[in-house]
Length: 189
Image 1: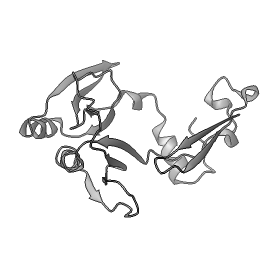
Image 2: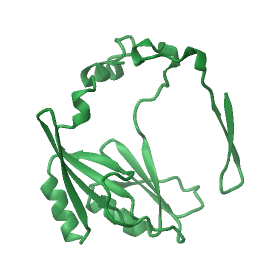
Image 3: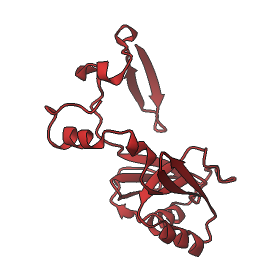
Image 4: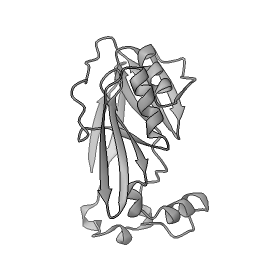
């Protein structure tokens, strides 16, 4: 069991408790007890520190189709919240934010969106004079086209077109039944 104290900018302390019982570790997901699983449903949002909030908002709206949504007025710093595609993007403004821009590297940290029209995204990137790189992944007869680019602060973003490789191995039907038909359904793992 561990304990970590995190200090926020305002000086407030938040405590996070991390616990694990190594004696109950299982060799596979099937052996995990239902009570040991985290009650997570989905990714809620990602947060990015950015130098120019308006420039980043324009990028996420124009290139990826995000909508600006209401952000709590109690925040004492510049920022913006955007939402679409089942996920939020929280932009945290900071004038001294370091740029992460460099050469586009598909093996770098990135967030990826599956899309239906790669050509449209490439056209928007061209219109905004944003550099991008493409790649194609093939596995077992499945082909996925990939597109990698940076946001204004250099955070890597990817877009994929085609059947995702991961879905070949994921029991999606069971997952959706478990999530949307009630937890008395057989868990997918």
